[in-house]
Image (cartoon, rainbow, N blue to C red; front, side, top):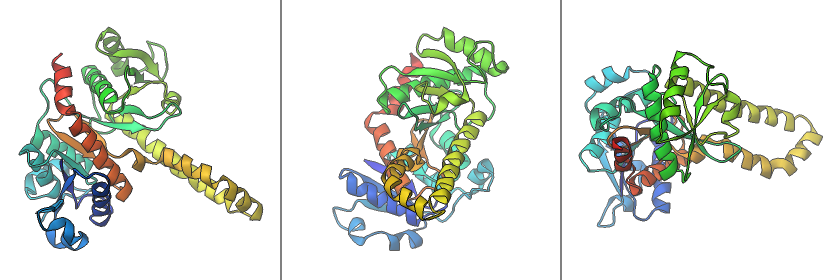
Length: 332
């Protein structure tokens, strides 16, 4: 299996991106990595034995341009034809790679996914799906940032795509769908959620359980949580910020005095497990559902562990032939 990695994308590129790629190679003997980016910078960071000879497992695809986080995605895509995310996506389009993974600009990856890979037939708008840690195990939420403005029909498609992802990649046999709203009642919400509720209730291809509120999300009251990208991205950032604040407060309290430090010593194993459950790095990247290829979006601050797990998600999608399966489900 060949995975194209945008080696120049992300806050910690290329060092952490390459470290994560090397860690993935250690765990997967059938994996081959294509590092896309500036060869002069990448090559010194890669062990020579992985580059040379018949058993080489890493290839470097040189390109000199990078789309920055602050650049307008569509404009940069048109101007920078040799950008690392553009070339990495092109390798998937040309069947030279099975998937692309990037921690660079989400907007740029969206644009290259749409124009480089194209949409699946029947999909109006691709969506970013994430695995969320909850009290009831990992659950799925989408969209978390691809579409700020949506129509009810878009959210119905998100529900269908999210259900298939939950089944085939997350291993949830009969996923229940919940619509993120400001109340459980059918009549609650704005025009978008009220109309979406009606369409979801009529849809026989999904198991719709109704509205879920913000407090239900981390409780895991639905397997697939559906919302527009504006709401989803705010939810995601609030969860990330809350987790970070919680552990900062705990650290402050547990280092206050000798008594607190002693308590922290005994609680440390449990706190480490808790932090792992809330750490986005443990869940890898977020697939862009609805494009004609496997494109995995990583957090901009991803380090080696997150990149390694994102590659694992990409491999799972490829092994399960998920793109074709999603296309078949849409045709149905």
